[in-house]
Amino acid sequence: MKKFIQPLIALSLLYSVACSQKGSSQEEIVSQRTNMKSEISLNNEMIGEIERTVASEADIEKARERKRASSLLPLPISPDHNATVFKVSGLADENQYLVAPRVYVYSTQTNTLPKNSQDEVMIPFNIAIIDGLSANINTVEFNGNQFKVPQALRVTDYDNLKAEIINKEKLNAEGFNIGVLPGCPSRISIVAAGTYYDVTPKDLRESDYCELNTPFTVHLKVPAPTAQYILGTALRSNLVDIVVNYAVMAPVPVSQMSVKFDKEKLFESIQMNLTAKYPPYAEADVRIAVEKVMKSSRMNIHIQGDYNEQMKLIVQKAIETFFVPYKPDPKVPAPSSCNSAVCLNISYTAQSYKEYFSVEWTQSENMKIEKVIRIGSKLQPINDQTVTIGRDKKLNTLDAIEFTNMNPNPVTNPGNVYSAGLTPQRGNMVEFIPTVYAWERRDRGEEKELSSRVWEDCTGRVGWENKCSYTTRIESLRTREFSGEEVWAKTENPLGAVPRLMSGIKAYFRFSNGESLECPLDVMEGFNQADRRVIKIENTPQCHLFDNGRTTITDFGLINSTRLDNITYTAGQRYVTNYGKDWDKYKTVTYSPEVRIAGMLKLIGAGFISVSEIK
Image (cartoon, rainbow, N blue to C red):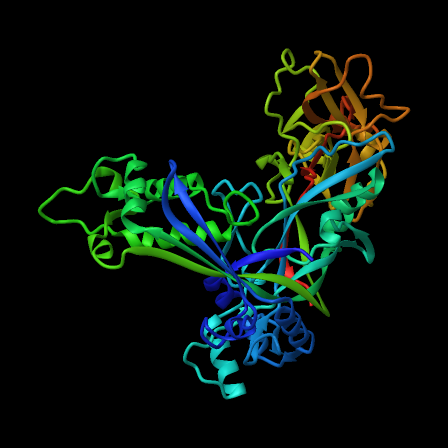
């Protein structure tokens, strides 16, 4: 069984022991103790000592038996707290109230996932079992960067939750804290549309400890089509979860550790490693100096890692012992470095009493207690890149938008390519989401009269009075013409409504070797999904993209080559009269209706992140 060392301070927080630090752990380590001591030296000079008190096997086994008999019961609480609380009996002298941990997943993958020779894809991502109390967690690189934990994965209003438990269970409020249920994942699965994919790392299968708020990397290995489905359709349809079987553990104390330093010698060593000659010192500089001294000391402590919880505890205790926060003196200008950073002064008071500086903690082994709970979170895609396909005010409606080319110059852009600003590579998935399909519809209207005249014309004389004989004359100039303004008809969300839509739009690719290629969207590998066309950037029989040196795409865009049937109508003028000669200048006019298409292009990313808890 693996062992881990946990500081007393951390134990009191993690396991929410309601009694003092001298509680159950001290009582369980009683008979037949074994004491071991060793020196701590720095530069061949003794500066302290380590003492370890080990409990007997009989006492350790008794402690294990008590832990095995523990009970784990859900405690009904208000859902407003966004927490699952367990009442635990048997892990300590008094009942404990522990919240179930959460699962936080993040993947910073962009778009390209390499395949192996079996056409399998390895999808790496990071996972952390989190306490739900911390607002941030470190990245897996431990480089100082942190991720902000979504509010949906955190306990809401910790103080009110404490108050509710205290009132419900009639507890003493003094010293009461809520901890987190200790344990470790026994199985980790990605669940996509009901199908489970085991991603449990091999080194976790037999492990009995997992540190909270500490991310580690796991891998999902699936066939390439399955990976495309999970990262594409399933993830974007809210169908992907991370599910963890969390095996509850109980810490069994096996020994007490005590580290004691000569105060004067330790402080002299720390001062020698400070960058600045005089105080105040930047807190970061102080921490680095203390860490350097501690790591250089020969401490015979069997602990995991170069800088673990025990070392952190010793470093923090040393900083708190020898330094105090810097308080600016109005009469003395503060160092410029302290304007933007936390600074510390030397604590001379702390050095004036006690000859030694000491730190204690409990060394425990984790033991499974045969209780497993299910925890998980809902995953959501990230790292998608989306661009909108242009806008054109000429259509006179807010949602009537079109390919408005950024570079319509026929010399530099003879293909009239709408450059999308995306650079998908082989195997990537791109979504084309058409939102408006508008076509030109010219309005000829009815034949109109431009001018007309009616008059009485004397066409002869009659009778003895020789009066004029009048004839009514008429003449009219008429026209039938295109109205002079474009009239647009449009179809919104046209993917299923316009059969020729995909054949009229071409994808444009330019490669690093200078070659370019155009392929209609309907001959590329892909499928329709609701209001969008999902396209895979891959070779097809009618679109052989990657060949003869064409390996890397440097530019990607769309070409609107949609052509509708020509429309023919007559237009012009004619003259009509009841005297003289009529004339007709009507002629046949043919035009090709212009088609404008609007929408979005989305380069589907391979990243995802936890957004909410699953119950």
